Amino acid sequence: MTEIAIHWFRQDLRLGDNPALTKAVEAGALLPIFILDDEAAGDHSVGGARRWWLHKSLEDLNRQLHGHLRLYRGKAEEIVPRLAALYGAKCVSWTRCYEPWRIKRDKAIAEQLKSMGCENLRLNGSLLWEPWTISKADKTPYRVFTPFFRKGCLQAPPPPEPIAAPEGIDYCAAKADDGAVALDTLGLMPSIPWHKEMDSLWDVSEAGALDVLETFLSGGLKGYKEGRNFPAKRHVSRLSPYLANGQISPNQIWHAASDVGDDAPSNDLDHFRSELAWREFSYHLLFHNPDLPHQPLQEKYKAFDWVDAPGWLTAWQQGQTGIPIVDAGMRELWRTGYMHNRVRMIVGSFLVKNLRLDWRLGEAWFWDCLLDADLANNSASWQWISGCGADAAPYFRVFNPVLQGEKFDKAGDYTRHYVPELADLPDKFLFKPWDAPLLVLKEAGVSLGKTYPMPIVDLKQSREAALLAFQALGETSPEEVLSSQR
Image 1: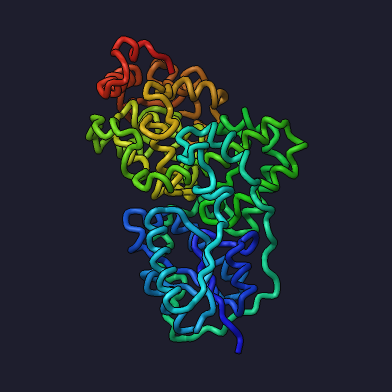
Image 2: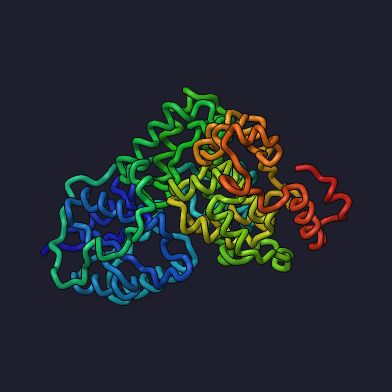
């Protein structure tokens, strides 16, 4: 009698370099399953943009599995043991996840399977180095990125070589009464067509992920260290949504970049690797600090005096702040499900420093709108820009969005694309239209307060107010704070 092995797909929606899937294929006839478990996720159930991506991902995965993927909705703690019993499975495999709620749930499921005599295969397929494998000499976790990467990751055993997708999979015959549902019943597709532009921009598939990687390595890696700061250039990989959803593994990216590294300056390859390591650092922080999504790592920031201004939050969300580079970034996010990393820092700084709105409000909006929404990355990055996290940007670092726009979007291509109402403004005034003479505004077809909003805050005054508020936490004297530079 053929033995049956269940593989539970989660954040590993691919066949290539999927060690847990490969183990299941080797163990017996495969029953591939996916469970939408919104209840266990609580506040961090899949956000709107990622739900669309997940729908497309599951379509692609099911095609690759020749229609054998079984979909379920409900509590995984109930569904996985039930299926294991119903099918008499020899084993259940899955790729480890590191979010606190998933760790707790997975442990409970593993214990149930053990009590049933069903083997549980849990393997890494999402990180280069699992959180407990990297630590300081005294065995405590790192809190600063550079030593984490240089002394921790780079001195640890290197990431394993990627493994090929399993061939000749023997599938288990599915039972009609096992509770599986159709993809369309999972309710993943948006009820409004806000994702239409995303549909034209992204190939949501495992093959698409590999194509994006190849395109980046052939044309974007060379010049990456400097070019990645310019949102109008293509010196970014745009792999983050595929990584977040598991359609490509970090091992595949790491080794593919290493293979072509000789064709790019070593500092470009090293910097790209360090960006992959920032993702690892975020998971390191989340694993050792389960409250990362909700509480500042630096205790004193719990007392920070955040402003309550729902109107400002709405203006920020809708890209109507009157600050062009900020509005460009927020509109890019809404239209494409993505935002360039440099611009993420600019819009984040504006929210928490100039508007003094709670970083958790920004984290929640990004969670819902980003195709690459990732609990570890999202939480750690917002704490970084707020100054309250590990190895965070200094509290007095307030990005000046005018100077940032002039430096990193000098020709205005990015800003004009997403804020077309300012397209005809001269470069001199593109990032500060409030300084433009009335005649210049008229010739460009711009009427501040009508065709484009006036700034919702004064940049200089709001920066000084923020620095005084941060100084109230006991950072340093008011004079030193107000004289500090970006």
